[in-house]
Image (cartoon, rainbow, N blue to C red; front, top):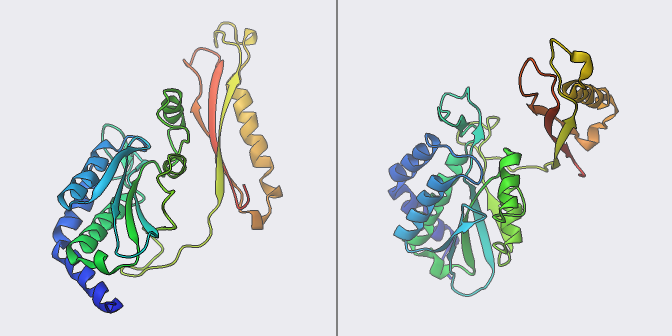
Length: 283
């Protein structure tokens, strides 16, 4: 059996040999951010690297996901390393796409660079012949749970069932052969060059609420309408009024937004939409 440190050193050297290319890929993805289940360009970049390295892979998993598989020598056990493809919507971000407002504010571009770095390291070092198991390299779509209405449209079209990338990959069986999965994530709280081990996370459910009222002219006949926006505002105030009842150990987070506040300023709102997460330690 090969010495473990010697195997690591071979992987490190293979990665270092492609340092500039890996960094350039991360930077390219950073300035071309794509939102969840829309990461077609980013997904293609991953698939192109897998092709160049001769890695057997599947594309189109959960719309844009990519899974590559490297076979080891003696075991059927599989460890997955994941990188997330998507960005978030932050129009004020200095690197935001001017057309979509998407930005890699959470650093998923670095995750994909890490994924490809690992691919280079494992393939070009030749260490897979010495490993007792397989390595799955998975580019995961739609980690950020945003644009819920768009995703519900994809569900209605039969393109997916779950609105997040990892649950959808599980449903599709993309993790059936995986015994352990890992990934990295960037964090502003960690000093440069340092790593920390992640702790527990909240679960969450997403709620879409529709408030229905009666439209009427806001200037000429406001008394004839039923203002759905007022109902939504009362709902948000009621949520706020309950915050003092949340137990610290439950780590509850509720953060609603109004995604549609009405049609026109001179019409009493009759159709108002609210979207919120409810996060908690035991959701």
